[in-house]
View 1 (cartoon, rainbow, N blue to C red):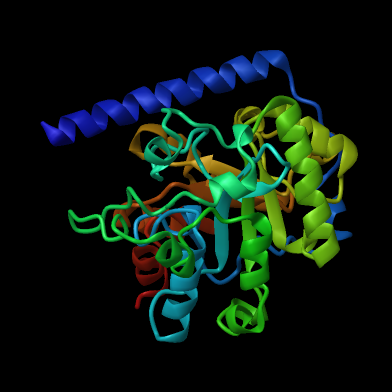
View 2 (cartoon, helix red, strand yellow):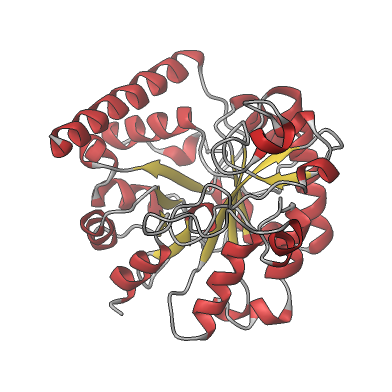
Length: 339
């Protein structure tokens, strides 16, 4: 029964993605340049010649409370003590009422935190609260490990000390760009995949803040920006063409159609340096060697999400995927590096 349900969910998910892509295709896609423009004619650094890169999705949501400083600190500790190693850290951003960028995947705070108890309401949204209020939350409250909730009974001081309070973009970058963290990084520094979750004007303002933060730190070459919101992609293309970005959901389908028809992308260019593609048995047409080789021909990296099954990791590695985003960075590292 569980296997059948899993298959059903996969099929429904695949159909939903396909329908969404077709709808996007009808709307139309604009292109602002070629992938090579990002790198001055040089090779795309996100194309890996040494096997797929390991990416911790939501900073590794199966091993630590997602999108928390605690998760990043655990990853650095693992890397320095012989455990799993991460090449690219993936995380999500929302904007607060006082225009701070915080790490959060969902549009509400309920699933991961104790927001209902602290704020007294359901479905509290980060854009409705200033950072100081959000800092009162325990972002590890609902994290389950082996049937237990190890962070539920912490005091506010213990929450902060453990890196489980709301984490800002500045908090993460301060830590990850520190000498301690960079000592555990491949070639001395990490790369990042950063997704803005807000849409509309909030998403555009979040893009302003993200760009300013990355530019001030000299991190633009080390971040691939992404969003599911077309208006935010268009805004970034128009205002921040030097911020590397991944494909929108519309562009994924358009790319696949171009691949299937053998279109010459150099004649029209694309607005992204990396395809970020879901993969499962129900949408296996997106995980082929031919598709990856076609992308590489145009200097486009291919990154897959969210890959938590060993079989899928091995398959994507075998066909030349550049990056595998997983909630299980420990398993992903073991599979991809054979350790």
